[in-house]
Length: 358
Ligand SMILES: CSC[C@H]1O[C@H](OP(=O)(O)O)[C@H](O)[C@@H]1O
Image 1: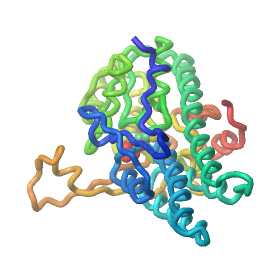
Image 2 (image 1 turned 90 degrees about the vertical axis):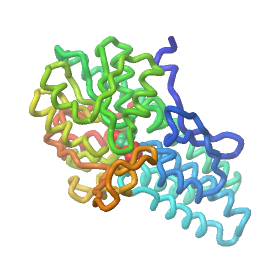
Image 3 (image 1 turned 180 degrees about the vertical axis):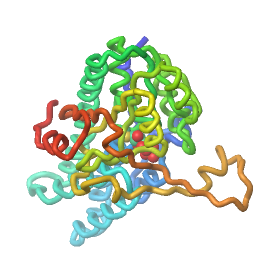
């Protein structure tokens, strides 16, 4: 059996001067890689969730800027920078909630601003995109260790954990955020079983987390999202461990729809609630979660399953795909720069001022 540390699937690859994305809409039944050589295709793949997951979206957009720089240079060298900026704006418009997207694009804008004349600009930008990718993978391994350390520290009697959506290699640069903590905790024999919510309506849990964890041979039970309450009531769960798409300066967390209800249930049942996210997920411009843009997606995701319609034609549909968990329901936020317990403005400000641990 390959240990989880080595068996880190990647969903994003730069190969043959192209961006390749594993089409997560087809997993786990089909593993299809799509080649991307123009920015419109990258924008469409983020928007249509070929690739998804906050850090993965940012990494993908960074490679999208590399593609833009190369294509625009061949098209119109004189207006090159303006055209690339237009492409960056198109990438920024692909999905609204995950702040990693905007962080990565800002990093690429900074790289554009400091380009030197003595090297091909595309080579310089590709180096920046690859460093964003590699730093995310390193951050996930650091978070895995820190999160597992927290589980060891509290040494809760129950040995089961609940996770929601997909926060693994498919959602990041590799290894995962919440799934990185789970991989590390499993390696250290701190947990016995993972209970993965199916995560309606896009099924990230049933299709992606179940795929990743079974490939790692980590004992995993798939459940309908609504099972979580009675599972916690049975006393077999010590932690709920989730990822994040945007964390505000006071510790409010935007994450996949259903996260907030898990946090309320955890508080009621004495289950500890951990959020694992790199510092690229923090939006220090927002003092709280009230102003986080919450993406709403189309009704087709709710009324049908794999194209098979279940609901009547004339029903109205409400499909917000994220919710906001207030900081007071969160026991710990684990980042690559350290852990903030009982997150607050002061604790997060102190964390964000630290140099990177890895
Ligand atoms: C490691 S962050 C993953 C994060 O992104 C997911 O959203 P989506 O699948 O819509 O991109 C979900 O919120 C996860 O927690």
